[in-house]
Structure formats: structure tokens, C-alpha cells
Image 1: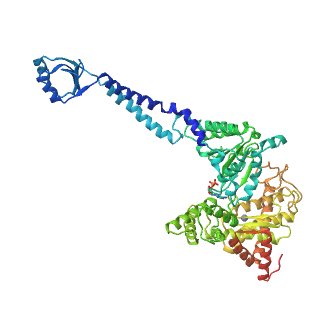
Image 2: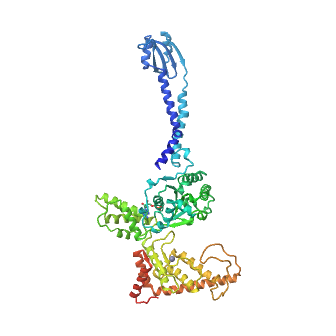
Image 3: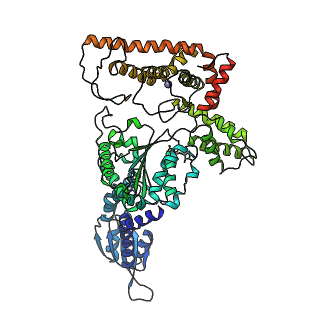
Length: 619
Ligand code: ADP
Ligand code: ZN
């Protein structure tokens, strides 16, 4: 990077400094001229001058409005030239009389102060403008030169400078695993080309701030040994229309020369915000920049070896055009780390500080639920600073505890951590889903429940075994699905006697299933074997456009009532089940809060224990 920049600078230097060159040369020239033209000038005081006049030593003088220059009768030492003197002119009305009296040849000269005028009215203002201009553009362009205005500000890291490998990234193994293929490709693009394989052009890293998306992208470049261009989406969007687009063009042109390489665009949402999403009308500049990005992405051949990685924490904001095939069509979710992940991240960062012998990183990790990689890096640093302030030789538990407290309050203020109450609600909500899933005969087995938010949006999650949709389901299976979805909310209701907003997505999905049961699959007794929806929609794919209605208002009302009936029946069923197993639910939530994540096998064991303890039989 340094070398690159240096080369660029050398190229630009003469242009950039030309104004200074001129000024310096000009000043130098003036002084030189003054000196050369007037050798051996005696600078005398005015009174001395008067005395010389009175003594008749002055041969002639030349009077300007500011000074008097003249020649003396006396010769310059060793020459035949008369000595030259100069003196500042003083207001002296009698001077002319005196000169006449002693017979000095004199002449007046009105010297226009052209130099001063020139300096004050041209050079100085220009100089000031130049300084202001440099100052202003320094904030928008790195070199403060108009030459670099349309240049991308992307920083290029050579592979040596990057120095990040997968060993530096901990706790997000799934994401690492998914990026393995990209690394293989960047290492040996020929191999992939020979096989005719298509490699994704764009990879979108989705995850909360600080989960390590940038780090991950750098690590991919580091592992593959390719250059890495880093640029933030907000840096593209300038106040001047057209600059962003020019930057995109420049960035891709640079990357093209360095292929294979990685272009990393952080905060992609700043640039790729859905084009309709601005209520204040279009944002021309951003739109142009986005269009340019799309054009560039379509225009180059991924087999050349340029991979574009984008990062965002708001994937739902992105313009759908960015997510189309051939653009950011691969998405990698960078989750918040769980307990083990946090321990691993802490260990990576603790390598750089001196820890007290036998310090248990596992218990530090256990104290930091909800922390992301950046928070943990910060934690280790804070703890080390505290230890230094206390003149300790190594970092020990009390420092970690205090640092955790500090960071925790900061994060809670920024709403990045759940507070205790929220944690309890999420734990019971997820336990509700899981408990229903474990109790119903037609439900898929639970694979994992977690309180660590997955991706964006959800607060916790419950994973069931076949997560893919199935294409043939019985009525009983669908009803069980609805029940599981309702389980979360009803659990909150039973335990806390109130419900939160966290279940909205569950309810939406459950209603959708009920709707399809009635309208498409003819699964309602009352409506009978009729389908009210045309066309084949994939099972459980929500959204899309509303199908045209081919039934009366009356039928529509009946359909609504049938949907409501399915929902109500499910509600009663789940409520009965959960009320019956309330102790088990509470026990499960407690374990979940301690462990954050419960795997499927653990969960079944836990349920057995809880059933025994509460004297109930499984099922
Ligand atoms: P993001 O791009 O997701 O906002 P960054 O990659 O900028 O997050 O992370 C900031 C810093 O936090 C990193 O430089 C690193 O020190 C630390 N960090 C974040 N995630 C991890 C991780 N998984 N493993 C190790 N360090 C991490
Ligand atoms: Zn839920």
C-alpha cells in the first residue's frame, strides 16, 4: 500500500507543488534582483543623510515617495564608482530648499507601489484561497488535490501488510467454513477456470456491528494471499453528484489490475439502500453510485479472480437489485458468538497481554453474554489498561470484572445488549417453542435452542431438524407447526402474564399456514375440498403478490372465520399443554439462561430430568 501510494505521489508531486514553486521562485528572484542591482548600498539614517547634504558630500539624489536613494562624492572603496546610499524618507518640507542651497542634483520619482498592490490584492488572497481549498478538500480527498477527486479512496492492503489469517478470527466457525471455497478459488483461479466452475462474484456478510465482518474479509485475503481493497459504502456517497460513481469506476479499474484480489465494501447499506426507500424523493448521487456499482459488477468476469465482499447489518434495507444472481448472490451470516465462541475470541486477544497464571477465560466468557468480537477485544484491552494503572504485573480476574461492568453499561445504553428482563422473556419464549416441539407427535425434533441472536432481528431462535420446507405435509403436521409457532408467545403469557412484541413474526407465520390450509389445501371441514387460490406457490413462502380473488365477499368472510378458528383451536391446545407443563417450562428457561445454547441431545436429557423431577411422563 505504501509503495503504491508513493508511486502515485511521485507522479503527482510536480503538479501539486507547482503553486508553491512559483511563489518561492518569484520571491527569491525579487530579492536577488534587489541585491544584484544595488551592490554596496549603505543604509543610512535620515539625520545622517541631512548631515551629508549640509556637508556637501551628496552628489545627487533620487527621491521617491518612500525613500531617498543617492550617490555620494566619496568613492566606493577600491573603485572609481561613487558610493550609493539609501534612506527612508521622512516628512521634511524643507528638504528641497536645502538641496537647492548646496547644489545637489535631485529628481523626484513617483514609485507606484505595484509590488505591494500586487502582493496584497493578488498573491495574498490567492494564497489564502489556496489554503482554504486545501483544508476543505483534505476532508473529502486524501491528497487534497483535485487530481484525486474522482479517485476511489479505497485503501489497498498488500498481502504482507494485511497479516490477518483465519487464526485471528475465532468463534464464527460457520462463516469461516462457508468462505473456504472462496479462498480456494483465489489461491488457484486457474484450477477453477479449467473446470469451468462458476464462482460467486459477490459475497454479502450479514451480521451485527463488531461481529468481525471486516476481520473475516481481511482474513480471506490473508489466507488466499491476495491484495485487499477496503472501502466503506458511506465514502462513496459524496456531496457532489457523479463523484461516487467515478470512485466506483476507479476502484474496479484498480482491482482489475491487481486480480486476483478482494474488494471489501463496508456499510453496503449506505450505498445500496433500496431505491424506493427514501421518502424525501430520490437521492440522485447515491442512486448513480449504486447504478455504477451494479454496472461494474455485471461487467467483469468473476473468473478473473476479483471477489467483491460486502458487509451490512441491515440486509433488509438493501436494494434487491444488489442481491440478484451475479451480484451479491452468496450470503454469509456472521452470528454473535456463543459461550465457546466468546472464549475462543478472548483467547485470541489475550495473546497480546500478560495474563495472571491460571486465569479462567471460560468464566470471563460466561460473564459476557451478548458481547461481539469487537466488545471482547475492547474488554481485553480495558482490563490490561486497568492492570497497568494498578501497577500489576499481569491481568487478573478483578480487572476483567471491572472492565466487563464498564463495557456492559455502555452497551446497554446503546441498546445492544438485552437487559435482565428481556433475557428472561426471550428464554421463556424460546423454551415455549421447544417444549411444544418436543411434546407434539408430528413435530420435527429440536436441534438447538439459543438465546444468542442469530443474524439480525430475532432475539433468540429454536432450530428444528429438517429446516428445509417439505412439499407434502399432513393436516396434523401443519397444525403442529402452528402450535410450535404459538408456543413462544403463550409461554410468555403463562409465565409473565403479559406478552411482548417479540412474537410478531411467529404469529405472522402461523397465520400464513392457517390461511393456506383453508384456502389452498382444502383442509377446513367447513369450507370443504375447495381451493380458493390459483397457481402454485411454493409451500410457506410468504410475501409475493395478492392473487386475484375469485370468490364472493361472503366466502371471504367465511374463509377468515375458518382461519380464525384454526388459530383459536391451536391457541387453546397450546395453552393447555404449556399450563400443564409450566414447571418444566420454567426449568428449561432457567437452564437456557445459564447455558445460552442447548443442543438437541442435551435438551432431551434435560427434559427427562425435569419430567422426573416434576413427576410427569414424557409426551
Ligand atoms: P465488523 O466489521 O463486523 O463491524 P470488525 O471486523 O471491524 O467488525 O471487528 C472489529 C474488531 O473486533 C476486529 O478488528 C477484532 O479485533 C475484533 N473482532 C471482532 N470479531 C472477532 C472475532 N470473531 N475474532 C477475533 N476478533 C474479533
Ligand atoms: Zn418465537
